[in-house]
Amino acid sequence: MCALFQPSNQPLQVGQQLEDLREWTLESLQTFPVWQVLSPDGDWFCPFCARMLCFGIDLATHPEQVVDHLANDCDPFETVGSQPIFPESELRRRALGPQIREYIKTDNAWHVRTPEGYWACPFCLTVTTVLVQDGRVNNDVYLAILAHCMQCGACDPKNSGRYHPFPKVSQSISDSSTRDKMLSKINELIRERDTWRVVLPSNHWVCPYCCDAVRTITINVPLDLTVNAPPQIYQHLTGGCAGYRERRMQATSAESLYAKATGESSTTTVTRARPDKTDTLVNATAPQPAVQSELMEKALNMAMELEKKAVEMDQDLSAARVRQLAMLPDAPDVPGFDIDVAYQACSHLGGDFYDFNKLEDGRIGIAVGDVTGHGATAALVMAITKKVLSMAARLDPEPERSVEVTNEEMCKDLDSRTFVTLWYGVLDPQEETLRFVRAGHDPLLIYNPNRVPPLQEIKPNGMAVGLTAGPRFEQALEPADLRLVAGDLLCLWTDGVTEIQNERGEEFGQHRLESVLTLVASDATASEIIHEIETAARRFSGNRPWEDDFTLMVLRYLGKPS
Image (cartoon, rainbow, N blue to C red):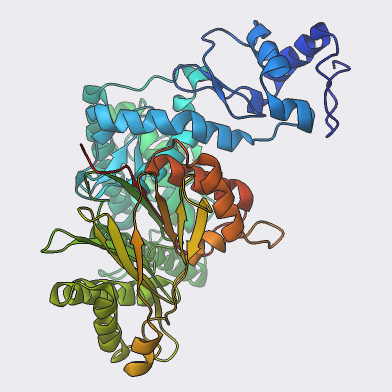
């Protein structure tokens, strides 16, 4: 190993011989994955400053451009030493993110989905778990697509990095549908026909078409037959089984199948369950005691029932999540404004919400809220609050009155342990004003380098919705007015953003949010700012999962259109 490469935090002096730096750089490019992150177009990302460098050559054999960058143009490399600052996952996110957004905007190959709405990856041609509701690729869906692509080997530029055209992706959906139907049929046959449950003493499954013991399919317990075996059986049948190719089943019973597979007669008696139950697993060995056969039958039936309930529960939760996401609108297109929002529930169903309401006078109501708790109860309260607020805004568009009416109605139904923090404002694009209230919610951040100070926190008084009704709530609710100036950047969030924790239990905090905001706000779009904040939060949390819903909204005022 090159003497220059020392995994420490001691700075590498650029004044050292460039040949040593070249040798160390070459070894790093050839050895460490964090040095090998490329965009789909082949651009390299520096693990020290995360800048994208458009070299377009094989860096593993021609590292001169990287050496020049490190020696002359990479400040973090000079100050932090030889240990890369950015992890591979973060570099891959930066490398893929903008390109994936562009693909989604411009190419139909990225909009292929199953009839149920599941997205098909144009790189690996597989149907993913990413659910696209009504064909809308909102920020939540985009992040899920990006997460898949970051793990997709076919997406890696080192493996060509080229995605397939629309016709081929569409065909993959058809092929996947055929496979799913056949897997469903195999499961049905396993449940209903004993010839599909013959297992030799060696624990190998016997195919009822070719009558061979399939060495790649091992059945150790009944659960293997219903959970692990179907895909393997599908692979065997479609991968060269002569009997299946001719659609000719050679065995009519479990006993005859065993005899064909072993060349000897079986003494196994096929135990038949009651007509409304599944047959027992047939193990082609000597007769088993009745109690063991009964236990085997019960185990198989229980496994199938549990699997069925798990699938039904997951389908119910997935359907509920689809309905909940459908309630959250896309950011509106408002002349003179750049608006974007990100939402991610920590479970299938979340208690965070946001909304945009177009009012009759041309103004726009903007809401961000957070219900206590998680799961189905929080999601239900969220849906009711969002609907009540929308109706209240139509009755009286002023934000303090809309929230007061919402609180009055919600207090009738919420228990003492449930409340909603809410930020609600009314944006007037023509008058360049924003009037808002804060019902126990996180403050509004506004950043503009032309303001003094550039970063300001606006935090009027107010208590959460649902805590108390009547004059006490109304007296505590303080409206605030803001006259917008071109260049203003407004940021709203729920506490699931600032309370993200790392592996040491430290919180991300508002101060880190402010740091990222001021660092990237100068020339970034609302979408790019959200991406940078989310990226910083993920880098901070490391391997620790997020324990609360994440909602982040950014509004940039560009000035009145000319």
